[in-house]
Image 1 (cartoon, helix red, strand yellow):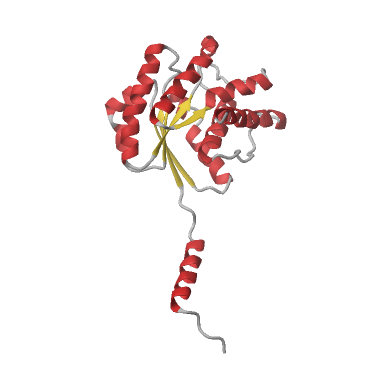
Image 2 (cartoon, rainbow, N blue to C red):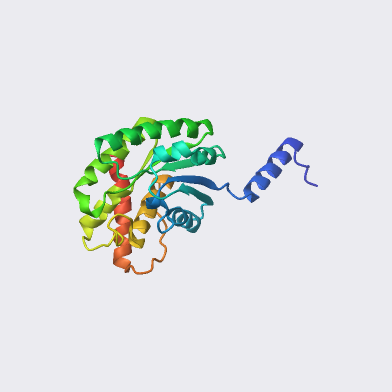
Length: 233
């Protein structure tokens, strides 16, 4: 008859089996921003990509029309949401290309980062894009968000850079919506790919996207990957 396993080893084996049977904890992501976040349900799309990749995720948002980060700070709802505890809090302001807007973006990112760090979460900056009428501002928008992310030691999610990368490959892509500021569904899809890539450090899974050819979908994936790759150089 085989000798029984030592009790200590048996306990370890049981613990390992129980651990293996438990689902991985969800990555909890809070988005704080305005209509550039809630248009086309960007948070929901990011979570859908995560679930398609087999990564449990929970995405929520505090996003209000025409809100700056200063508005969010002053009305306190975003701070109450942060206090509930997250793995990552994604901050989004308007383009912030002007010098005074850049100052506010950095200052408010720092204020929010203090609250975010209290909960053990990390801060991320969702880089947006200028309006179609101000496309010359793309580089300044990129600089503003990069400076803010560096100021708080946060994660930069370079969506605006991904838009430029996509147009460099296929200038015909319609990333703006009808008003020339908010994203089209395609623009939001590209944003979700870049944000997923930045958060999880891997290419996003392939999901069907209505209205896009396979070639166009491939361009968006490449653009998201290129934008993140440039951050590492």
